Each structure stands twice: as structure tokens, then as C-alpha cells.
Length: 93
Image (tube, rainbow, N blue to C red; front, side, top):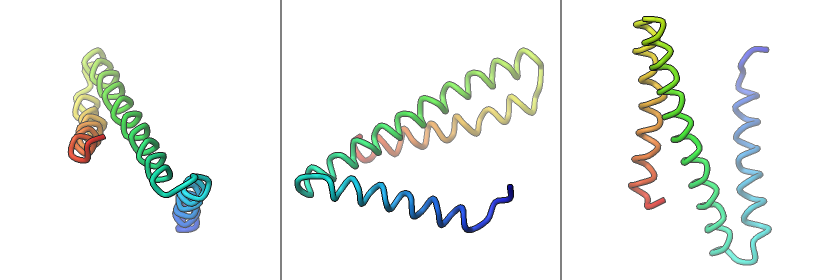
């Protein structure tokens, strides 16, 4: 299966549909935005925890197998986790 713009458009439409469903099912706009904020907070924490865990697994695996490439590649999930954590700190999540 090849990657195409149809997949990007589909993901975008799905995200818009989820946001619309959350806002339209809420009793008022304040509750809807609070629910969206909670969803973003959970998603950010999940990404950060998964990034830290993947970093540690890749680092241990790289040290064990003495793979220099794997040890440098493990910095990618660490960077994603740190940027996500910084995003959460900046916006008070």
C-alpha cells in the first residue's frame, strides 16, 4: 500500500469529525473545549511516555548489541518526548 494524499485528507477529515462530535455532543462550548483539552492532554502524555520508553529500550538494545546507529537513532523518540513535554509545560497541561 502506497502513501498518498488521500490518506492525509482522510486523516484530516477524521480529526475534524472527532472535534465536531466532541463539541456538538457537549451541553455548552465551555464543556466541549474542556473535553477537547482533556483529550489533548491524554494524547500528549501518551506520546511523551511512549517516547521515553522507546528511548530507553532502544538505548539498552543499542548498548547490548554495540550498535552505534541504534544508539544515535534512539535520540529521535527522546527528542519527540522532550518536545511534547515542553509543549505541555508551556500550555499548562
